[in-house]
Length: 301
Image (cartoon, rainbow, N blue to C red; front, top):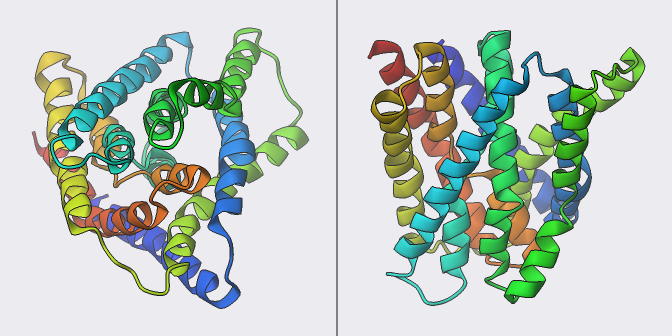
């Protein structure tokens, strides 16, 4: 399984490289793609994931746990970042500190290598992470370019919130959908991963000269690939112990690289998209090492 994970991570990185090549040749605007992901594709993916999940309502505990962990890490990251910067990089770091690429990156891996029960767990974790990204995370990031009132108004307009609520209602009422309609919704899952990873490369391609903010990138990578996974795995090993089946999913989720939505939202808000894209790309390449290590550790211990 470890070797398969390495191959699949490499292929996801390849999608970002293709995005860079396409962005260089055709001068695409990654902000337009980011808008599609945030306002159209993400809500469809969340709605479909909920109504197709084999889980029952007890699985909402995974969403709640993911949301609380992400929110805690974001606040901790925000306070940490204030030790180094006084500008809007603090907000960008805070958002990135709370999340990982559970959708564009982890979801394809989960669908390929885990069983249905673990897939259901992962889907509800992803829902919790997405709710963090477009509520607490969005507020933290938007505060870097908007005042608190504008930030709240932006957050409550996020369609993903209403898609998740609608999906839960339909699931509760056990409303069944025609196979043709489900097939239509399934199309958005592929678009979600491919466009999400491509956006990273397309954003980098926009800049004729890439100037990496080394302090931001090094601290963000250290947080995402060392502090977050160690903290997350230890919590669910010793403080809130879970069985090995759940711990494998948790390990993959906390070891994911920086979230593609860091690029998506920074593009949408015009908040240091070049810093976000280069850091996310470096993090994704580093995941070739860190994700297999996290899974190996959990499988052994």
